[in-house]
Image (cartoon, rainbow, N blue to C red):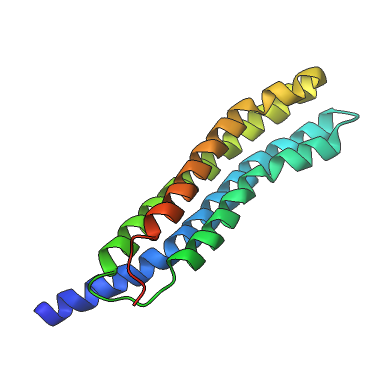
Amino acid sequence: MMNHLNELVMALAWAGIFSPLAMGALGSIVGCTIAGQAAIGAMLEAETGHARFIGVSVMPASQTIYGIVATFTLNRAVTADTAGGLMGLGFLAGLVLAYSAIRQGHCCASAIQATKIKPEIFGLSLAPAAVVEGFAVFTFVFLLVLSAGIPKP
């Protein structure tokens, strides 16, 4: 029984290493899809500003970049000493990256719709998306700092 438990812990640690990338990318896919659909709809109705709409629609892709760096940062030998930290940090950071990308997609879709009607509020309409991005950045930075405490055998 104990051997199976050790194998489970090791498997969860490996999943934790890859979680920031996988979950960040999953969230980016959903977030970019939500914002992209809004951009397409706005382009059908607006005569100008199409590049803005597309640019805003890819903002949730940044969580994938954070996930790539986080995964490389966590990548190390999985041992009994490292397993808990790798799984905990990786999985929780991945969860935050996924959720923030999805919610940022909603913020970007709203910004696109508002800008379509009132182009002069473009910059201000991005503030909610920037705040959501900030939470992803905080999580990313804390993962980098806390991962330094996980031993590298």
